[in-house]
Image (cartoon, helix red, strand yellow):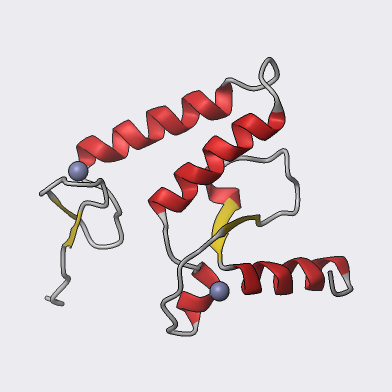
Length: 116
Ligand SMILES: [Zn+2]
Ligand SMILES: [Zn+2]
C-alpha cells in the first residue's frame, strides 16, 4: 500500500488532518462550501464587483499558491484569480484558479492572442 500522507486542514487554527488531496477536514470543507455557495448565489441583487471580491478572497484563502508555478515545482504566492473558461460570469469554484501576477498576465495575453 502506498504511503499517502495526510495533510493539515487549511482552516486557520484547525488541528484536524485531512485525506490526501483535500484542503479541509470534513467539517471545514462543508463550512467552506456553504459560505462559497451563499456568496455565489447572492447574485444579481448585489453588484458584480463586490461579489467577485469576496469570491476571489475565498479562492485565495483556499488555495494560496500559484497553480501554474506549482506545475513547475515553484512555490509562489497567488495574487490573482483566473477564470479558466474566460467567462467572468462563471464563478463556479472549479472554473477559478489562483495565479501569481506574472502567470496571470501570461495566460491572459495568450488567450487574447496578444500581450496585455
Ligand atoms: Zn478543519
Ligand atoms: Zn505563477
